[in-house]
Image (cartoon, rainbow, N blue to C red; front, top):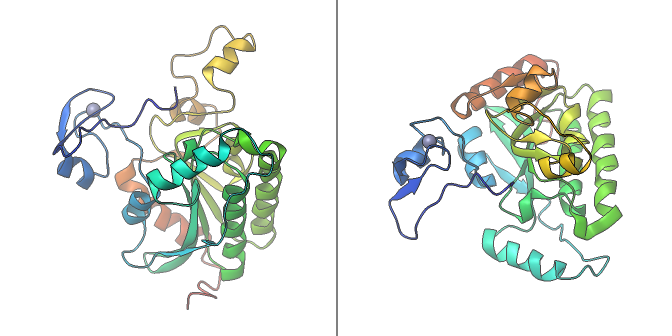
Length: 276
Ligand SMILES: [Zn+2]
């Protein structure tokens, strides 16, 4: 179910098909429109790099924590092979990338999850990068922004992956104790252990339209005996109506809204203690 929203593109094609309305789009138009369908406004998933380029000031991104490497502490069957395949496919080391950038000239600490890497699952490395990004916000005296995109905890790391929920939650608390604003953006999908830890306790929570947001997926909910749910169950719109997030933001407006929030919430900070 979680794999349903990647736009399909034939190799070497100049065209791409919207997964929602099925209309054919020029690849160049699709990319320049930030991977949002020009016919039905469906927001297709982005890689972490596309997200950074679409959101932050050009040329200001500095990646950090690149030394963190995933281990296979449980010797889980096929984990090492699957992880290696994901590294090869995406060119990144794990499902979360962390670093610093500027947003309208304001320094910010960032973590961006990428669903293309093992479903954005949170293992030890992803959790550590999220925690470091939040703690770096405290060190920098700059707002922390996390883009969420995950099916949940990484089952191949067992309890070590569930421990990341506590670690990231503690890092959020550190931001709170130091008056550093933390903004989370739910993108498609934001689920399970990620939603139940750092994602849902941000000072401000934004979401992209129609993003899948929930704890247990539809299949698990059915197994638990939930027989009837609203048509838009576990969408950003449903969650917004329930009061769990603050605003649904179109991708083209995300940079501007984040900039306003950082300026509004971070005005008391000595911005850029590390970045200068
Ligand atoms: Zn469409």
